[in-house]
Length: 308
Image (cartoon, rainbow, N blue to C red):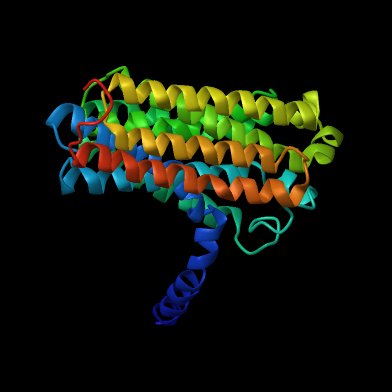
């Protein structure tokens, strides 16, 4: 009877920690990459079905796949980097170093995220299920990259860039080259803002042999690298519009994205930490507005100045 009585209290404790669980995996940052996943879904539906809507079944399972694999990756990241986070003044307040959550609890979140991801892939199609272990392994293992290579920012960028190709496969059940270009764009975009973010830990990384573009080449060169990566991202997204023969609405979204990228890069050129944090948070506007204009591009036929 004692065990029975303690269960409600344990359940209340778990429910009470829900905000901590969500904050631990930065669930709000899903707005950075998830819109690009939906762009992949919308364009795949347009390419295959002639409409941007894949149906509720596909939409729901793609969404759950996004959330599941992100939970897996972020939870694993928090566990893998817990000791380093405890030593870094900027990250010492994170949930595991601060004692708010135990590694076992975060590990449970990782297992739950993996289960949701694999079930979602199974519900989508055989190719999605076959590739799901590869994606799951990558989002866990990339967290070790910064201990070995300064290319870790691009490796994190690739972890986020899996979303559009994964969503495309979730809709079509087949491999196509079109989403690979979107994946490249997201990799450059995300790798760029992660390179900027890495400048916040320049002193700590150099003192503790943590690899990053900033710790290897300096803050100024990291900022220059970000400009190059974001230029490549913008160019790739422009080619996507022509390749898939999207109408003028997509190109309006692309132009706004370019303006926002220019603003972001100008914001961080001084290297001031406060401006770096603001620029990092700014990225969600880039992806969400481009998703909105992509939806308009496939939903609203428009005969404009483009040849198609």
